[in-house]
Length: 432
Image 1: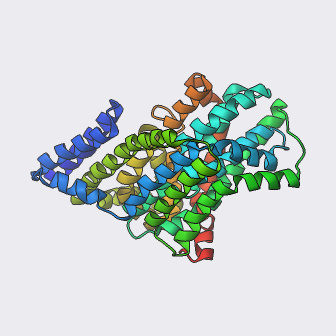
Image 2: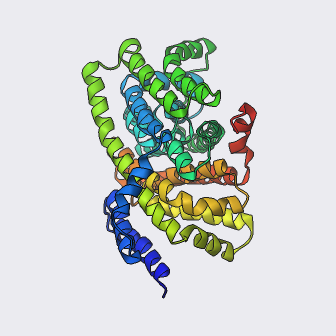
Image 3: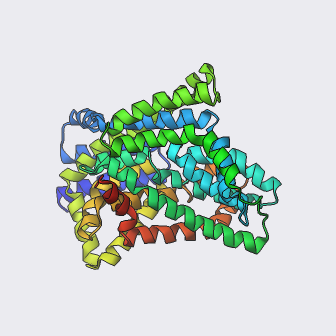
């Protein structure tokens, strides 16, 4: 066995072992990198150099800004207004509250960019509301956690920024525009599934649709929706960069939450910022550690070897795309989203491009795969949050989620094999 193969086994083997032993992901990445560098005979002084290089990026500054924006808007009384807007739009349907849950997640995702924040914020309101209306608790929880993944696709998503930075040469503005239709496709697929189950179980429907009521709720929610408009239009129109738009969005979110919706006072602002620091610390140290890990992958030629291995199984683009989805789904079951994007992108993106996928389309695929992973045991963070909010055993929530997994997989396959779902809007707006 040559030294390069041995170092590759040490890097990936030790990482997987620590993941299975439930090490914190940053420790798993860092320790496996150190062990690999020692086996390669590298000076460990290069470790902090690679870590600093990983976070020394102007575009990455958008990540803490977008996270802060999401926390401020999520804590500022936005949830209730978006729920009311969604209710005025789709509440009249059979299983109306389930449809409201899904549509509200689409709106709220464009503000928070986080599936966990969506589940915690909307779930705490909608799950009890659905149960009071006669919906099954596990069904209500399943709808909440699956629809929360829409927020990962709808801009502004900080995970899209992480992918764009890791992939290199991918436009953040184009990724933002690319997320709208896949997010809508996911919402529609979940709505169809919810409707079928609601008809079968005789769940109630709400009041008849009223254009007057819808316009009133839209006007009340307009300040929240404008935050997304500022970011997306600003970036795609070239008015400012993603980082600049994120900074402006934070100031706007602070103003709206405190002075317009009055959902928080200054004490609440400081509390929200305090919660941001913990999240940002985790994200940034992961990015730094993953940069050093990725450097080891490059030195060991792992991306080229992985591409050769996958293409040796089959030369068919269809088979390769299915294999990529399968790999990402399995990774999503054992790892959180940010580490998967940071570690898997350098390895799998060349394979995806060789199979005819556009980097932007692959980015959408990766984010949705990771989102499904957030709902699956043993590491499904959003699954755990949903179970905690609903106070239901995880196993029962998983069982209720099974039909919705099928809806999400259907949306994933459509996105994987129909490029225009992801690329049409960026091409139309000139972002691509």
